[in-house]
Length: 122
Image (cartoon, rainbow, N blue to C red):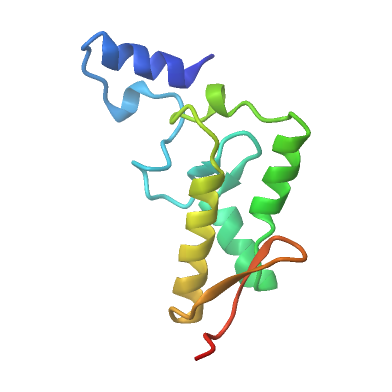
């Protein structure tokens, strides 16, 4: 089912939609840990947080980017926004590191494209 298209159609048709009308939880509207940040590859807030807690890094963006490059995504259909999730994933990973690391500056490891916390150098 084309969830994003269906939701947009309802809006354009001036019908009032509620959260109960949507088949999946919407990342920008539902702050629960069980909500997908990436709809194509099942990266939830909880999964990203668990990976950061366990390994002090996140591979979500790298893994998603590899799948996108391989042509395995369907963001236009699965994501309620109708667009790629990588911006949301990167923002959520950074936010999660800030929370877990006490608001230290963050740096992307250019060798692996993984995110990990670093101290700022002044």
